[in-house]
Amino acid sequence: MKCKALMYHNVDFPPKSAKLKSLYVTPPQFRRQLRFLKSVGYSSSFLGEEKGKGVILTFDDAYRDFLDNALPLLEEFGFRAYVFVPADMVGRYNEWDWRKLNVKKELMSWEDLRFIVSRGHRVGSHSLSHPDLTRLSDRELEKEVHQSKLLLEDKLGVEVDTFCYPYGSYDERVVETVKRAGYRFAFTTEQKKFSLEDPYRIGRIGVFGNKLFVLFSFIKKFYRY
Ligand SMILES: [Zn+2]
Image (cartoon, rainbow, N blue to C red; front, side, top):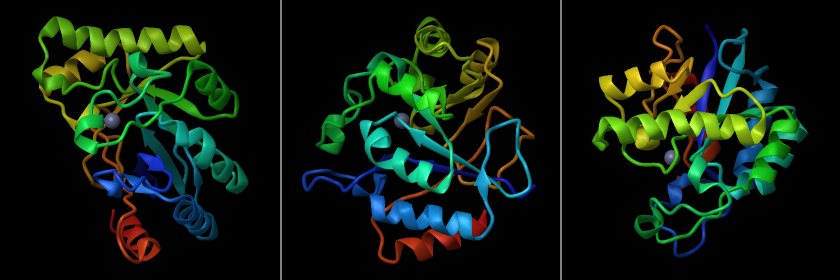
């Protein structure tokens, strides 16, 4: 299968104060990546609907810059994407890591999310509050996994069948809880070849923006996995 999955966080210019600037891919960089994908014949794809040269674009944390910066470029090149939402943080900011990153990043509102869904993009769960799920009690884990699905489905009126582990952190117990809650797929942050052999441990190619020759390293990585 030639399908590939890519992981993004922010599409924006990083603020000076921000730590971990690699999470930011700038809009010009993102545009060049989309232009490259299109020029080599890739088009966007969703899980369970893979095709020959399909690329599954994923955006973790549902930042507002998806709406402002990524969406116009995705539409320009005809791509669609998954956005993974920490459901209790909608309309708020990255309360789970703003101290560590030294920056408060705004998340999309329910209205924003309804808008992107209406434009053909899909929403998945990234838990309720973005905790490390492996460290929670059974009860808290169940709540983060199950209630986030119900809340997103209720507020957005669509089925949510895909989960994305916060921090890429999971174990057997977490996987079983995700299965039991009715999700069909789950993304990790592991970089490996795309495969649905284990639909609850799907890897992705991480796209980071802090290097020199960003497009070159993007292309190299794209073909490696
Ligand atoms: Zn996240």
